[in-house]
Length: 376
Image (cartoon, rainbow, N blue to C red; front, side, top):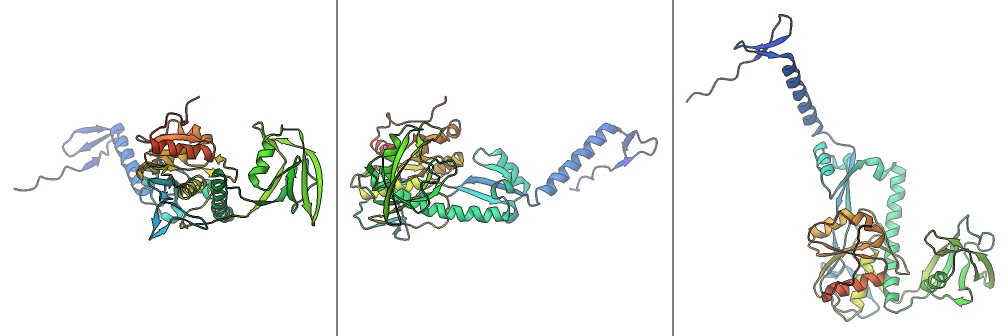
């Protein structure tokens, strides 16, 4: 069987240029020709752009890590200095992965797919990474925050288990608006607040929590081996709490050593899941009873859970990893609502105590008392 002949070529008509005539003699109007040519040009442009590197950053769900698991026979979270107990289930920390067009050379097609995917975001590279100098500073801060979050997670976990962690509370900074300016200085060590000894960071926070913003506080401190006392008015933190306007660098005396076998993650947002893993491992109870829980959130030494970025992507990453439950900082509820993937139950937590109660409730199947993010 012979092949069908090719379609006849289209030729421009030289008589006035108002029509295009194919060899069969059928006229085509100029509008049809312009539309056809424009469509062809757009298709060619898209084809070219789709293979050229795009100067965008694409964020999406990153890998998750079960903090109760092992890596080549070594616990991902390893504790020395205290007995540990087997733990069932999963406590997964979640991450966000960011790719950049200048180094990954992804195409416009990938950018367009990222825009259309609710689990991803696409922004110009500079919005994420900034200048080279800014990026270097950010990476250094992220690495330091990763290390600091592990210490804070350990302190918070121990104190939540009623094991106080002694600390030397050294003043690292007096902020310019503080009314302690000229009275306290970096290097001073706070030993008492309003007449109450503060041997731990949480003790300091507890005493300050009873102070009304604007009221005076009396601070006993040690400078150069000498103890002295000053009084000054507190500030308002904007949420009804009192602030001294001091940056405190607590030197913790940890009774245990905790090491983490992850070197590919930065930032402080894994703190909550570290704390829960430590609590689970230090207690005989089987809190999870094989439940698969993921989550995110910063943690400070007082056990307060802080908001993080990219929570929608982290929830999708949790589902991809097989988690059935997710713990979200209460301050992230605005981003949680409307973005929860199918099959995932999300509970909001404000403190480590909330989070620990949540995994116990999940493990026992009693979740009625747990808090969920709700629309205002």
